[in-house]
Every structure is written in structure tokens, then in C-alpha cells.
Length: 304
Image 1 (cartoon, one colour):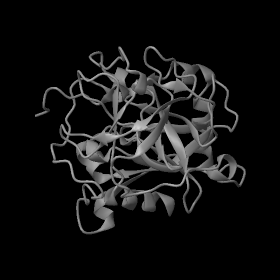
Image 2 (image 1 turned 90 degrees about the horizontal axis):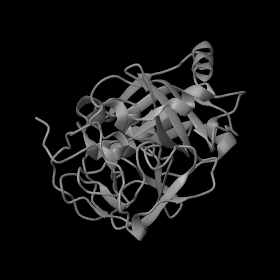
Image 3 (image 1 turned 135 degrees about the vertical axis):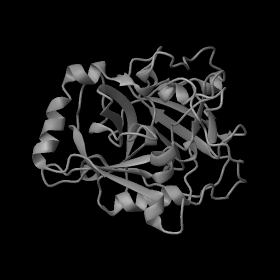
Image 4 (image 1 turned 60 degrees about the horizontal axis):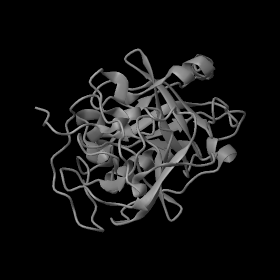
């Protein structure tokens, strides 16, 4: 039974969604130590566009018109909610210049085209994009298809091209049960012209088990009202902790749907992503704690 009073963010707010009801852990702790003793039990992998031909098809699929018309995951159902209203000054997002490490994610689920945000992430293979789990998999349910990342997207311009995922990697706890404690995913992008993604864009290093009470810059491409998804925005502030049912960070922020999966940067390090919000609580973003599970999943993607 899905408990009332909660919604999966303005970012995916498809009505009332379940959140795993677990106690918040203390600062410096590692929430959610996985689903088993082995890494394989914590990691779910899915093959995406694995051939050159399939990758070319995905790039061709994302025409300017399809990108413009792709919608935030919150609009997957007509009862989606979470429009911003009455933002406090500390919660108000500000428009910022694009960065090659940050971009828009485009994908298809259930026959509809959607948008999220993502971050090019330091990795062994140089091909990892970090985003939200719900931008890779329905949680639980089907995986995304036509998954592409456009670095530094700006009003339809793609200065670093369109990169296509060859595999999608997420926590099993998200893929199997939609656990918002672990709403994160890593897309491994196919090389282009013999170059890895981060050879072209640069990247952010990623950190784990850094504790709570951190100062974050949260980035994203909000596309739901009053935003249009065409520019990069940022919220900044000191994050608290969720006290209503997850181990997530809590950050005042007015960004809306489309910013899902956008990176939270602290001290130059990627340490969370835009994930969800609670119904009735305006202009507050929650992002998963990057603990042991996230590190295992990232390591799997990084070494793919």
C-alpha cells in the first residue's frame, strides 16, 4: 500500500508515491548498506544501445522537435503535482551559464519522451553520467530506451553533441522496489570518434559517505512551470536531513520537473542528485545520501 501524503518530486510527481519508511541515520553514517553481502545483489545492470547502428538510431531519434517536446517525468500521469509557489529567497533557483559537465538527459518510457538532468562523472572508463534512478528505470518496472545525454544543452544548441547510453546501472533496491533512499542511476555512454565522454566534457569527481549538513550547489534543467527546460539553473544552500521517512538530504529549492537527476555539488565533488519532494511542502528538494550502495553501483558503472 502506498502511504498518503508523499509524492515523488515535482520531478516525477506522478501522484502519491511510496517512500521507504526507514529511520534517518546520524551524520557520517552510511544509510542503507545494500541488499546482500555481495556487490551483485546491490547492483542492477541493463544493456541499452550496444551497437554502433543502435547508437546512431538513438542520436537520429532525438530531433530538435522531440527534444523540445519531451516532458518531465512528473507529467507521466494527469494527477502529477508539485508546482512551485511563494519561494523563500534561500530556495529560489537562479539561472547560471552552462557547463560541459552538466547537461540534459532524454529518454523514452512507456511510449512517451521525457527529460531529466545529469552530470558527467569521473570514472575509470570516462563514460559515466550520473542521474536519478527514476530517469533510468520506472522503479520498479521497465528501463528507459533511447537514453541520451546532451552536455551544456542551451536553448536547443548541443555544443558537445548527443551521447548515447550503451548500458544503464542502478541500485537493485530502486529497480526492484522503487526505494527513494537509493534513487540514483549511472548511464555508461558509448564512445564517439574514439573519445570517451569526459575526454570531451571534463567531469566532476564523486564522493561517498561524506555525512550530512553539507553546503550544496544543486543544478538542473527544470522544465515544468514556470521554467521551460531550455537553460541551466542552480539552487544553493546548507542541506538538512529528511525527518519524514528517508535518509535523504533536504535542500530548499524551487526547481521543478526536468531537473530530476541534476547533480548536487559540495566542495567540487558530486554527492547527490535531485530526487523527490513531499506533497504539500513547497520549494524543497530531496537528494539521496551517497553511501555504500551508491558506491558499489558507481564502481560497477565506472569499470564497465
